[in-house]
View 1 (cartoon, rainbow, N blue to C red):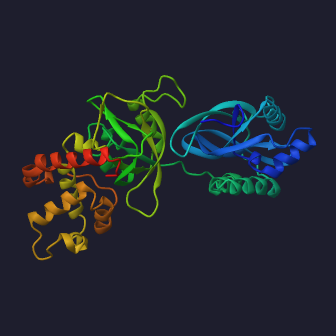
View 2 (view 1 turned 180 degrees about the vertical axis):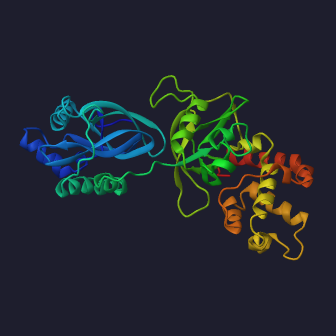
View 3 (view 1 turned 30 degrees about the vertical axis):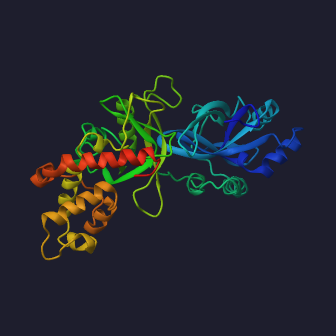
Length: 396
């Protein structure tokens, strides 16, 4: 992407306020049109805080500090050499705020290298309450660029804000897959998973035969699981090791951790962490569904329906009447539910709503022999259909 100026900088505090920036530039002999807005971004593994006292502001000033699982909403600007001089002057670089290289994540999950200004940890203090005037300057800047002011308000009042606790899995970390227990360790004892539903994201899959990789540079759709966990820091640190992710921007990363929007059939897509692979692992996965590719999707959903059915005696009555015989819940009806789940005509969210439970793991022992009877034939047909959809660039 081509930017107006050669240098990219990220603003997360008062530099978002055009009037405040212009006033500073005029007072100090700089041009006031040195910043060109290029888009909204997020700074991953950082949290917004007010742990620096500013003499010029008469109170606390915005800063960011490293925090796994958090992100800071911000704006990306391009600027010139003169713009960098002005920013360094305003931020007191290098004696107060230090000019620091960061990785910013765009809305499509791609990364961009930029600079921002951070008070080093050894110079940071405890919470410093900002003045009302300074807070309003920052708040107006956030609103100007359509950024959420929730974390700004919490940080300004000295309250901790929560990390992004959702993660999207699409391969060996999904339910029923070999590495799922690594991120949902002993779930039945520790209860670290608060919510899990099947969902889909933008991107397509390739595989080396052992595991898939998500390429976000695609207009196709990939299927997987969205989980909300109570220990996201631990989960991400474990998943980072599994996925070969070292740090943002590291040349040694196998997968890179980024952000994506996940659709589970609700009114709004949810933002979640995901591990993406930029490029080709060797072979396309035509269905963009690892469960279809590994011939386990039908069996997974069969066990899922049976497990959901155990949590509420009226579960089957709550499912759409088109798929049920209230007096005789038979194999044909059950098979219909499973097949419609596999094809996307019915969503796991519908099952969860009917059962009143939003964290279910299919119990292998419950899977009926009837599932295996038509599993191979149905999945072959489903993969053929998904392959056709992929060629037509349609969403599955």
